[in-house]
Amino acid sequence: MTPYICISLSLSKQLLRLSTAAHIVLALYHHDSARTCFIPNPLYIDIMLMIKNAYFCVAKVQVDNPGSNWFLISMGTDSLESIFSVVQTMVGNDANADVLQLAQRLSHYVEVTNIIAEHPRWDRGLRHLHVTALGPDMKPADDVDHINAASWCGDTCIDCVNLRACWLKG
Picture (cartoon, rainbow, N blue to C red):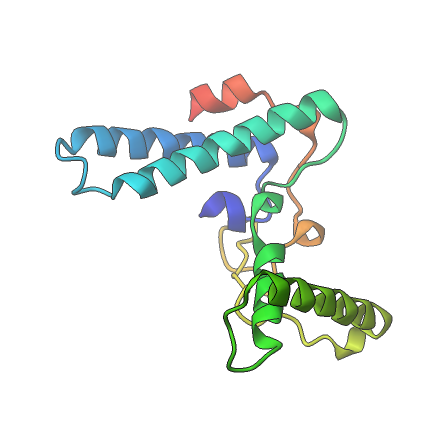
């Protein structure tokens, strides 16, 4: 979890920690001869794909947009979860929707988003997406309410990352 919640980590250190996690998970998974006692197969695959995806995203940005900043936390699904939480609560007790209803609800979501953009003080924010950030001393950062790109203070410059070195050190 540290690569995602320690706001002072550089992108290189985040990738190094993800590499370490991948190697530890692989070793424990390989040691488990039944392949079911440590973690279920789908969870193992999800963890490895998430780490691979992080490395691939950094590589793509290094090629497509050198000199830019990139945030590991941007790979999350917060925005998608927030859209569906709003869409689901729009209709009260009818939480399920067919394609037509979903299209109508998403168009209403766009209208709500436009209204909130005009009147930001009306937005109470999301309540269940809050994670306590860790500061440079690995203690909870009290001044950070929700981890986002603006709250990140670690070096996120894509040019400072050597993917091979991060993987091998991990």
